[in-house]
Image 1 (cartoon, rainbow, N blue to C red):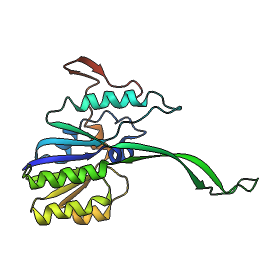
Image 2 (cartoon, rainbow, N blue to C red):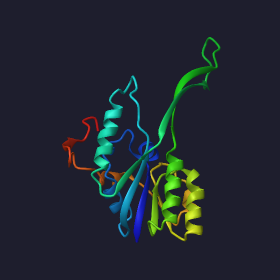
Image 3 (tube, helix red, strand yellow):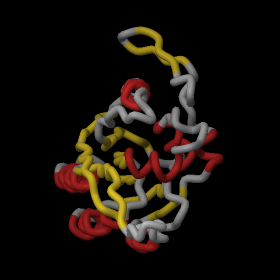
Image 4 (tube, rainbow, N blue to C red):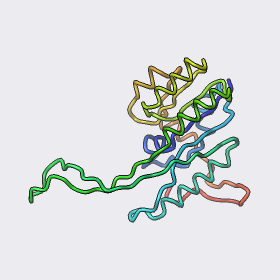
Length: 207
């Protein structure tokens, strides 16, 4: 079955690979492990460009290297949202000795990826661009577009959930649902050195 894969990069990163040795993830290899009977005809990867932080100034460079690695895969498109960073006041679990109950923190939120993913999923279904869709995300907000594609266009939608916690909403909505486990991540890594039109490049040393 001709399958288009839609990847929520933020959800995948924070759900499955942050803090692990599996950040150098080959999405094509992952799909061979997770959906071996499907014929993947393309990927759409939804993310936002990260910004340097005082505690991690090289984060944008690592992201660029990984996006370059993804672009060695055939038929992969990267769709960008954006990050919003602002200061918010958050309550403390325990008040400070001086009686202070709130503290200002810097909060960063990704904006646009879930909406972009839903829009592309629906548009591609309308254009008959796939026979089956697979979403890599554990975001329950995707319930409505999944339902719409399956009921309006009669196309099955599967979910590969990268989150540790099961999403019952997606589990009961999607035609099929699988959890991305560590063994699948371990078996789906890019080679340490890749080549594109610009030449050779390497997996980030800290990964």
